[in-house]
Image 1 (cartoon, rainbow, N blue to C red):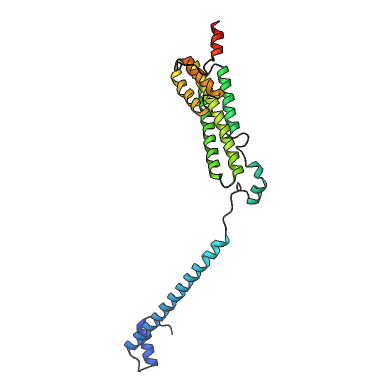
Image 2 (spheres, rainbow, N blue to C red; image 1 turned 180 degrees about the vertical axis):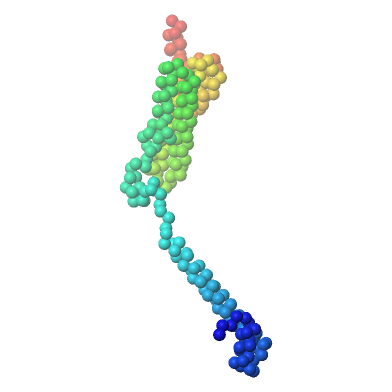
Amino acid sequence: MRITTVKEYAKRVILLNPSSTWQQIIVSDSMSAIGLLRSIGFVFLTSTAVLTLVQPGAAQIKRPELPASLQPLQELEENYSDLRPLKDSGLLSMAGGEKLIDEANAAVNAGNYDLAVEKLRSARQLFNQLSNFYQQLAGSFTGIDNRIADGQRRQALESAQKRDETTYQLALVYRAQNQPELAVPLLIQIIRSQNPTRDLGKKAYQQLFELGFVDSPYPRPSDNQSSSDNY
């Protein structure tokens, strides 16, 4: 016999167990429902915990792939000789400065003084940066490795010499452009850096004398030379 309603179910229970009441039936059904809900909740929480524990493991299985452009460290060490781009042709190098000077000379020969000024200014700044960097390295290695310190100090001097030579060429271009007000500060910088007794310092002072910025020539002619000039 099929039971379709709660009332019929209660009547059937009472018939089978006359001592039962409506309240006992309701309480019994409620306890059964609560037990069922608790069972369902426990299963749900258990399933959630299992999924939470499984997901990190599954995520760890799939590892991100490295970009194809990245080389293994071993290959980089083997190709270390190729990782010196500044030695021969890099811009931040003596060779890079020499290239700028060659381009400036070509511009002067073509009569393009504006381009020559641009190239010489870039070369001058480059040599000045190199000199400062080498001086800093020399100071860092002083007392630690004197061999390296001496080598860096020597490169600093070479870079400074090229800077002053480039500055002198730039001053000459300014003179050719009839801009002595731009040439004079550069010539004074050369004298301060080189010392008036050195060849480049003497040439810079001679330019100042020719421009009329100074009155006394240097070096002064000796007494014998002056007496021979009088004759």
